[in-house]
Image (cartoon, rainbow, N blue to C red; front, side, top):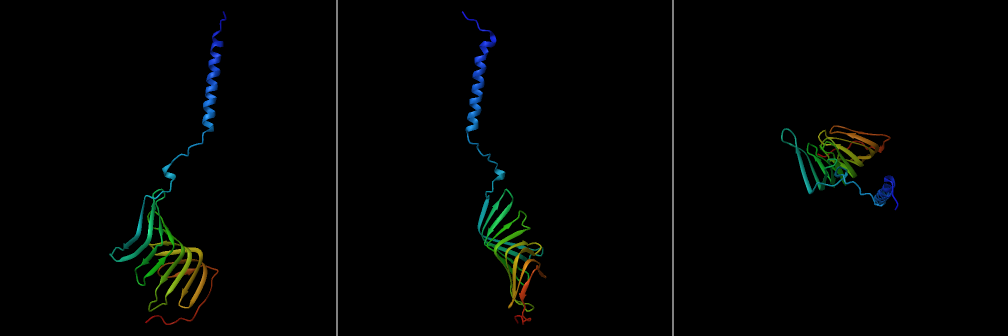
Amino acid sequence: MVFLRSGERLFPLFVLAVLAGLTFWLERLSQPRAEATDDRQRHDPDFYVDGLQLRRFDDEGRLQYSLFAQRMVHYPDDDTTEVLAPRLSWHRAPVQVLSADRATIDGPGETVILEGNVQLTRPATRQALAMTVQTPVLTVHPERETVHTEAPVVLTQGRSRIEGQGLIADRQRAVLGGPARGTLYPRQKAMP
């Protein structure tokens, strides 16, 4: 008859426990890790609008500006809105129209970044010829009625044409960045 000491009886159990632990650990290591699904990191829209028409009125009830677009998509994770084919019109005389391929609007709507074929037009008045500004990207602050860009800009007014690098403008004036070059024609008579 063979008697085992208490330490010798526990040794096989200890080896089995270590082997079971190693097997479990190797099995977990060989499994592909499941990506954590943190909804805060997702950029999924919570709503969209087709055929958007938005109008903003000033404190006296006069139409200040209107925005029309093919589609608007809102993203709640960063509270931004993407707009397809936006057309923004300021309704104070003279009416100015700003259009682009797409735009991104920040949460409060204070900043709009227009991209792709950006064009600002102002019709002719008794005091000035029609004007067009073209650029690939433009940042707009609708409430302040200001625009700016550091991208190339082409400004045409009548037959005159000026090209520059960057633009800062409001309803009263436009400052074209340099280097600038262009062809200016003598002031022509505006529309009667």
